[in-house]
Length: 272
Ligand SMILES: C[S@@+](CC[C@H](N)C(=O)[O-])C[C@H]1O[C@@H](n2cnc3c(N)ncnc32)[C@H](O)[C@@H]1O
Image (cartoon, rainbow, N blue to C red; front, side, top):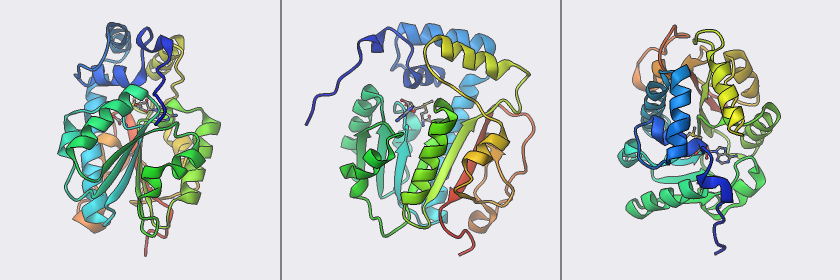
């Protein structure tokens, strides 16, 4: 096994996963992340609520994938640092592969691995889709059955061309009937200029961050078929589609604290 290389600046600059951890009330972060989180909070005090909603969504989507759609093998792309909800992983998830390109995140994911049979972690840049799909933990999934793929709060950290390429490649190479769960930061429900200021702060820290409009997110999802019948909803208002749990799917929401869209999409025929 090759040694993990941590870049020299890793502990001196804010890092997405650690800032996220700090905003979510975690302790796996450094002074530089806490200072940066404070500058973000000065612009957007709703960020911790947004992180909490996104994490709760992780559990609800896993419940729906397994119990509603019978998909029990999952790839969590850009999984981030572990948090309490990770420990509530439903038993119905038979296999899960946690993927991140942050070596410290992957190290933490390996600790979750030790606790739960059927769990694997993978250090890979998800933008290299061929390398991702060729990796042993992904190959070991059953490719004759659909796979659930989570991209929760990851695509905003990719530029447009990369995001388009990744989403198209995943759609083309995953088994038919696979289901993608996406959450994506947006400024559609945010006071004017607020998310642009957040993006500028991240840029000053050397990190690309692009919240997108609902229309731009739907364009990125063009190679996929949206499930649910009424387009994107905010993460805070997402419910499993009606057929599975007999709950109404929320319409496009008004203001809430998720400041993110959620979508489920499939590679296969959603009516079959
Ligand atoms: C904002 S966090 C989201 C974490 C988690 N998915 C959640 O919803 O709470 C984004 C995560 O994506 C990871 N990430 C960003 N770009 C990536 C890439 N190109 N390949 C793999 N992971 C990536 C980061 O390291 C970070 O852990």
